[in-house]
Image 1 (tube, rainbow, N blue to C red):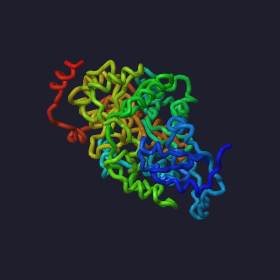
Image 2 (tube, one colour; image 1 turned 180 degrees about the vertical axis):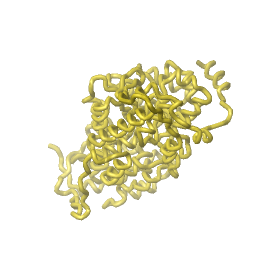
Image 3 (tube, rainbow, N blue to C red; image 1 turned 120 degrees about the horizontal axis):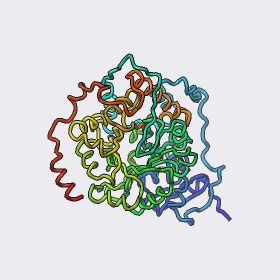
Image 4 (tube, rainbow, N blue to C red; image 1 turned 90 degrees about the horizontal axis):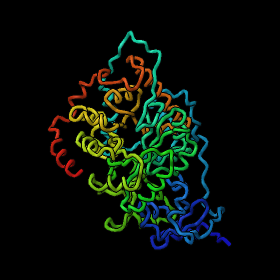
Length: 493
């Protein structure tokens, strides 16, 4: 017979020596798992002795408990009558429902609604960027310095957004970048994003830190709908091998994206400032123990959602060892994400056909502050090693807020343009319908810009349609550094 515990009894087990938590009405002894937790010990200790369901559920895919805990660690259930009563929100503070999605006209409107809707924890994780958020802001601002060159007296009746990425047909050159923890924004989560992409023939790259399983995300995919899967290689390579073996069996996932721009987490102060889970615990000993834990001991975690997600990520990846290892464990095409210089783009081009594409990205300004925007890297490649565009498919992300931004990136040679935060804000504003509205706005604006340029097809966009003189003065102007790279990497290859 299943044992039933009072919440007061569970609350006594709130130390590293005896750590119990309540999840979905069940009581678990997680003492032996504390220091194996990928997000670190601190976050578990702050929830020790408490009902952790509200914090756990939005950020863990189904099956996580079964994968990490032994059956005997399930101790029983909790008497729901003994749990602390949740106080109803005062009527004056209750939020109204979201406005009609069609009334939202741009990304700013959608973000404003989502900010009022999602939790403080979700807002802080999505909004945050490193240090002073200079790169985050500049990702968007740089597009304002590129001018478009409209042509006239051209039949603009037709406009076709169809394109291909790695041989996969897409209905638009806009894709959803890997965006973690989507269920923090809305219960529909990553599956809601997939539903929206299905309606537009859009591509979605599934985050390594998704809050749903990849099988759940692709479950209702349309025939031919395209997904990629992001991997952060773990220090424990067995976990990464198992993940790749799982992904290899999902036919909807067409390629693997190896993320390189965040080998260590950036300092995201908005996220860290709002990481107050457990601070008001009725029995504070676990919180005190976590705060006093020495830095030299086992991984303590903490520091916001973003920093917790990076726990366990291998910082030692390199060209010589990692790519052969990855190719050994997947038959899928490999795309490298997070390149920020022409030198690294050139090195990637030397690793074809193993590497099929690259994504120019500074992690949404969430890794190194003052790192260059993708536009700068695009222009660097055009300046120093334009042959990269012939050898690899080049994608970009970061700072996209308008269809004109999409068009400018395509004119500079990008194959497709990714959006991360806009998809999450859309989800927060209205679930799957909010993401659809996000993609609809960007799609419509992209078509309008192409028509005003006199361009019917995506592949016809080029440098002749833009004026980049204002940005050119900001582009790296030192030595190319390519000759040493040619000799080093070609000899190894």
